[in-house]
Amino acid sequence: VAATVADAGVGRALGTSLHLMVTAPGRLAAARDAVDEVVAGIDRTCSRFRDDSEIMQVQARHSGGWMPISALLATAMSAALRGAHLSDGSVDPTVGTAVRAIGYDGDFAGVAADGRPLTLTVRSVPGWQRIGLDTVTPAVMVPAGVEIDLGSTAKALAADLAAAAALEAAGGGGVLVNLGGDISVAGEPPATGWVIQVSEASDEAITAGVEAIAVRDGGVATSSTSVRRWRRGGVTLHHIVDPRTGLPPAACWRTVTCLGGSCLDANIAATAAIVLGRDAPQWLEARGVPARLVGEDGRRVCTSGWPRRDRP
Amino acid sequence: MNPSNPTSQVRDRALRRQRRLRLAAVVLGTATVGTFTGMSIVERAGATAAVTSTSTASTTTVTASSSAATATPAAGLSTPTATATPATSSAAATVTGGSGR
Image (cartoon, rainbow over all chains, first blue to last red):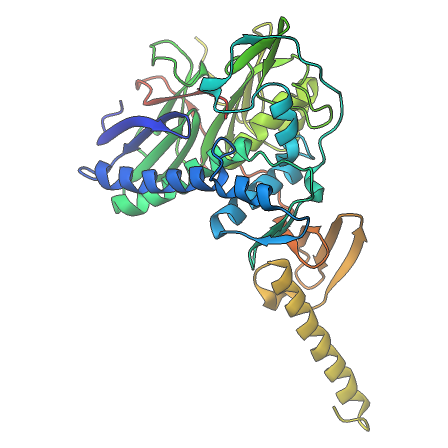
């Protein structure tokens, strides 16, 4: 840990790991309370794994008309729709039914690692354009039969909101929030920057010699098809769905890590890259997103702005 | 409005139009209503409408529905303001990697 990081804490949140770091001495507990409050709010609001979450209640009661929602759900829906817009629909919150159909129908801990064959139909998801959102009232309109999954963007949004809240609670300095590999930093970074190991899975141990980068602001996110996988009828499936087919995208990249002005934008870019497959490097390059893509065959491709290692 | 004064009529029409546009901006959830003078809805096809402000040349896209919409900045994905660098001297503080959702 860099010398200027005063304190760090670890835990679990949103079904994944939580790592919080602060540079202000003695402020970890206050920052942790702030993070816990944000994360609990996102879970109560956006989780599709609990029947009492606001998004599940909205969908259970939907009548095809407008329904009032909380400001936090409006923020989360707005983030999801922004992701859909900026990714040209590659990251679409209306994948809920498709994600359930391929077997991810509950908290991942309860998803059987192997199972009988599934009968799946190739069809595009309903489409984010069908959702209405009024962020002023606030209210949402979800047509009948459209199932929302905010999972792709809600965790990254939680990291951004948590970092901002932690910084305020810490009263200054710098903070880093890592929610299962979705990382947001805020405030004044350590002298070395925030040093982040880039791995296949977020639960990998910190190891000397593994690629690491130093960031000073914004966010970092990784999407991977090599974690949260399961098999049905001998076919390996994973949690990312191509909205055009309703199925996991064709194998191309197993891991994509992106940098962004926020964790949310990094996450949108990384998820879109997995869906876009071979077109991803060009898509990322055109948008100036620094990214590191690792193919199924292990080949590594980096786009503009990704930190280049010094070569002897 | 003064019906005998054409200049006044033009001004009154402009003020009414400005009030309508400000109201529309509030309904659309967009910010800074003062910049919407001269705004016009230039496209409203299907579920997407584009709204431009001729006075500021900024563009906002909205997901349109029957009576309200989501304002979505048309700006692209944001990138960090500071350049990330390879870490060579410090041990990593944390790990990014896949975890699912």
